[in-house]
Image (spheres, rainbow, N blue to C red):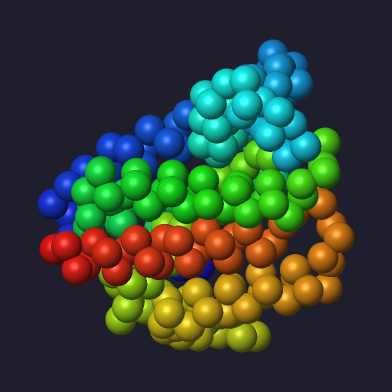
Amino acid sequence: MLKFRDKKKNRFPTFSLIIWIVTLGVMIASYFFHQKGFLNETFAIKPNEIISQIKSQWLYLLKLLSSLFVHGSWKHWFGNMILFLIIAFSLEKRIGGFWFLLIYFTAGFAGNLYCIYYLSGSENYLIGASGAVSGILGAWIVLFPSLKISIIIPIGFYMQKAEIPVLLLSLIWLGIQIILQLVSPLDYSIVWISHVVGFITGFCLAWLYRIAN
C-alpha cells in the first residue's frame, strides 16, 4: 500500500489527465476494433526505416512522439501508466503544463532516439511511453528530493509502516534498469537502457526548471 500527499495543489494537472486518457483510449481501440496493426503503422516507427523515410519526409520524426501513446499489451500499458499516475499529477501541479509537457515528450523522444541507434537494423515497431515516464521520474526526484513514500508491510498478523525516500527508490529503479540491460543486451523486446536515457533527460530538464525559476 502506498500513501502519497503533495501539499502543492495550486494547479489542476490537465495535461497529465489528457495523456492518461488518450493512452487508455488508444489501448481500448486497439483491442475492441482490432486496429493494432493500423495504429503501429500510423503512429509508431521502425528503426530500419527511419533514415530512408526522413530523407523523403521530415514529418516522419513526429512518430518518435506519437509512438508514446501506443502500447503493445495491457501489461505494457499498466506498467507505464501506474507509475505515471503516481508521479505525473503532482509533478504537473508543481511545474505547470508547459514544463511538464517539455520534460515528458523530450524524455520520450530521447529514449526513442537511443532505441533507433541501439536497434538500427530492427524491423520491430518502437512503441510505449517508458522513456517519457522515466523522464518524469527523473524530474520528480529533483523537485521532490526529500519526499518519502509510506509503505504498509504485512508482517504476520501485524501491519508495519515504513517510510522510504523517493530518491532511494528511484536509484534502486535506475540500478535495476542497468542490470536488466547488462543481463539481456540482445533482448529487442525491451531496451532497458532507453529508460535510463529518458530518466537522465528528465533529471537534467528539471534542473533547468529549478535554475529558471
